[in-house]
Amino acid sequence: MEFSGESVLVTGANRGIGRAIALLLAGYSHKGGQRLKVWINYRNRHEEADALKVEIEKLGGRVALIKFDVTSEEQFVEGIKTIVASDGGLSYLVNNAGIVLDKLAVRMKTEEFRHVLETNLTSVFVGCREALKVMSKQRFGSVVNIASVIAERGNMGQTNYAASKGGMVAMSKSFAYEGALRNVRFNCITPGFIDTDMTALGEDVKESYLKNIPLARLGQPAEVAGAVAFLLSDLSSYITGETLKVNGGLYM
Ligand code: NDP
Image 1 (cartoon, rainbow, N blue to C red):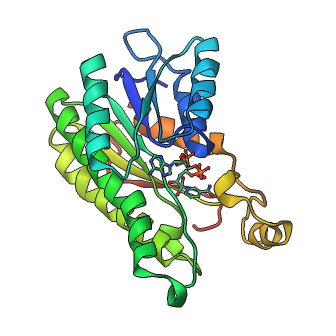
Image 2 (tube, rainbow, N blue to C red):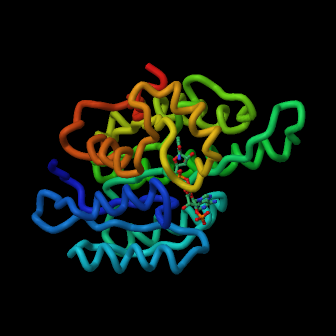
């Protein structure tokens, strides 16, 4: 896979899917010959982020840590400014950080609904907007937003999460229109059930999920990372406003 750009920011990259994305991207080179530089965002688990940095460095990758909470607009904006000041630009952004706060709607407080929207959707708006400013000037960039199969099919106990991820898919298409004029692409991935802390389920619950997955297993974080790499890379240069399912056939 070829990458015309040089640097990528992955939010929430200290563990789970974000970690796998950072690790995979760090192995690729951009057209200039050097490895892609990966900025690992984390909010407070410094040890995890630093361990990933060390792992990538051992593999010969270029990596830096950038600490901010995506729900803080000020911190997110500053984070991107720091990267641009260091590298002279930002080629790619992966909005991966996200949370769940599951409850049946009748028991969900409005504050719990808002909290998930703030974390999963408003932060992605801020990230996309700031990236678009930088990437428009460069006349180059690619952004991948990690949504969810729940955006496509909804789920019991996830009205807040479904709203945030469904909003992300629709918003990304609107960003795709605005970015297209400046050669900046925006795409989404909708993972199914991926084996991370977020889906630490009891065996009985897991069994019931597996019945509905044609590939009959949970996905691995690296399998989402592969799709992210494709959507960032030059291989997908004519793809924008798309939503790519990575769900083992759970929702077709
Ligand atoms: P994890 O819970 O394993 O990891 C979530 C990551 O997001 C952590 O690094 C976490 O940081 C970070 N994060 C959360 N809130 C913030 C914040 N305010 N600021 C900065 N970082 C934050 O989840 P996954 O890896 O499973 O999920 C990654 C993404 O993929 C999420 O957007 C999720 O919705 C989506 N997804 C996951 C699926 C799955 O089955 N696992 C399926 C579909 C979509 P910290 O360690 O500090 O908490």
